[in-house]
Image (cartoon, rainbow, N blue to C red):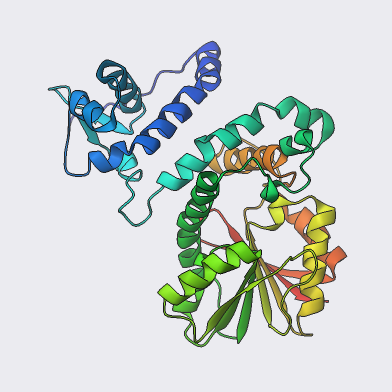
Length: 348
């Protein structure tokens, strides 16, 4: 019986690998353009030629064709024999009308604000401060240069990412022992809405800045959860709503250096009862960095926090130290089907 030969991919010279790394920004720029032009939505019903797409998007057809071919080379689109372009499974995720759309996330991370901040990487490394500090901005979330469209893209990206996280967290962690959950820094409420839908006996509060809380109120109403959930505006550096038995923070603590993170956690500690629980939902930095996807994601997110927020990605040991200083004991770490963990703490 003939044996099937295994195809071994060629080993690229290190210079070529470095070239690919150095030019990775080419792809981020064309992804941003594709998301802005709505290319995926225009291809939802089937392949189309670049001339037709250029007419709809008011672009120069030969130039758009070159961009589409670069996207095809990366597997976002597929170029057909007749020169038309079709969506691939990756490209489908750029559509706006599907569950799990990643278009808002792509626009956020390839958009001008994050791209401009990364240009200040040397400043961040020399000073240990985020890029916004160079413009004398203390709180990156209050950056006056952030226009309404950027804010909308940020909210939409966080909502898209949070919907997937909510399903994973609700499946991995047992919320049935609790009666009231406060989602601290809960944005537009997507995470808490997902958890409440999976736990009909649970009540909740979304707590965030007043502008975010207003948007969360609309989402709560749309989800028909006003009987069990409310949105409260405030400042988690001052205080958080009291009386709940579990306080949850998803991708909040990694936005801040230890001193500021401790202020938030201590406010949660003061607000909860003696048997309260603290749940941080974030990634965990591995003990040793290798070339795995987990390491690459953690390291990239860590430097992105340095550049854009002044925060950091933390290891298990760093979380344990942070919990201890805030008055908690880290009791367990629950993995989920996504790249985040539920890091549980009990008031000491």
